[in-house]
Length: 244
Ligand SMILES: Nc1nc2c(ncn2[C@@H]2O[C@H](COP(=O)(O)OP(=O)(O)OP(=O)(O)O)[C@@H](O)[C@H]2O)c(=O)[nH]1
Ligand SMILES: [Mg+2]
Image 1 (cartoon, rainbow, N blue to C red):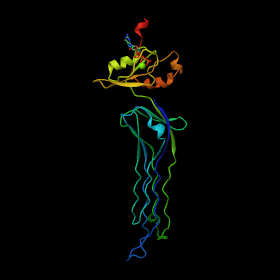
Image 2: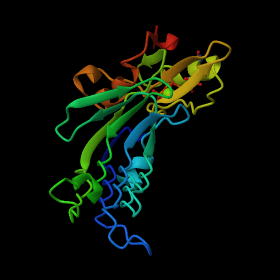
Image 3: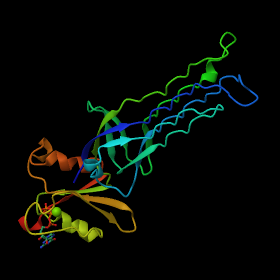
């Protein structure tokens, strides 16, 4: 299961302001009429309940929002750049490149703007004054620096099933839900967390790979799996009755 990813996001640049003057048949010496640039698109993260891994981020690593369009004549502002919405599974934690946590998005349809698009530049009409009727200046749109982000997924489940390898965890998940995951009489049949939904109750149950002694100290792949049951409200510890 892909539950970590490193990506780069870049919000759109603001469109440049325009320096131009009104030039029409009967208005040979019109004033400044260069419009402002449009705003750059934002980068937005949005929780999508249909996702449960970060796999798309393994192949697609850079995300650029559209830039704002430049200002136009006749005082028309350039079009704003389109926002870029990046869909993530519920339970995604967003960290900066130093590992500091910025957001923890758990709720369906949660959304945040991680990087705001650049402001549009100003057209030359802004710079008109009593001493300068014909300003040639317009400003550039703001450029936004790229952001390097680390994503980490901690699944959101109500109930977690834990226990030694081959104790019957996946069998229990299958009995309670329609998950229909693989079970077999050898250890480590389950190598990635499985989710199932308890019918009629909308309770999400997570079955994780078997834990060996010392898993909580990181032994084996302990921490990698345990993080997926950290947020559960209830743990079911399955014990193999054959051993009793
Ligand atoms: N007799 C008996 N066998 C069971 C029971 N529950 C599970 N089994 C069998 O025990 C074996 C292991 O079951 P799994 O559900 O794959 O166990 P698991 O804990 O998910 O195993 P790992 O994913 O490898 O950690 C399978 O062959 C199951 O058919 C039970 O209640 N009684
Ligand atoms: Mg299993």
